Image (cartoon, rainbow, N blue to C red):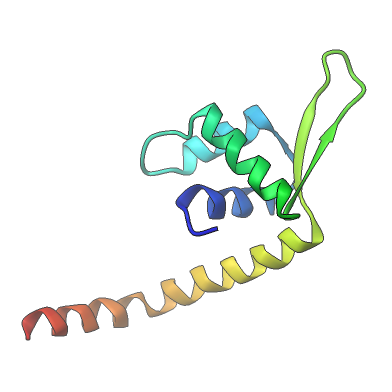
Length: 105
């Protein structure tokens, strides 16, 4: 959970279920750096599914459509991640000031 993509995936899926390609497109638009590769997204989704944070659903359509959504466990983790982000944004100036004081000696 400590990498940049996992938290971002949780934040995006909190708005509702998405298919792999849709999720990749949204993540690419939100990332300040390079877009996530298909392979990395697949690995991150598998890990989140393995740990019970994300549910994978497959439709009976031809071709099948695969979607991803947060589970109850994933929603709980999302709330914690969102609270951490909110706290960091609220206290960002104090953190920056502390760093500046530290660097000054």
